[in-house]
Length: 122
Image (cartoon, rainbow, N blue to C red):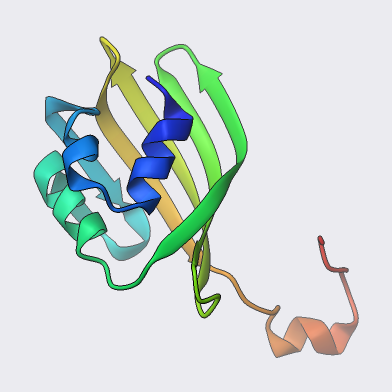
């Protein structure tokens, strides 16, 4: 499976292309919002999400039948920014499950800023 093309199709919200990546019994879990989707529901949620999106895979690991990505996803108008860690299990070159953890990007909380600890990553 071409993980780079998969993320391109996710970001482009290309429903037709996304259908080809999933095994018929695939499921997707978005743990931060406690949601479980079939592949069809995931494609609908992804493709009907408002806005136009861009992003880049920042880290990628392949371990046996699992692809792990850390991806920066942001709106093309730069109003929203997220990081998502995805654990993508593949069988016969098709996705059988995805476990994702999404986080909003933003500044550190004020209590940590007040302590003057840590520095910016980039």
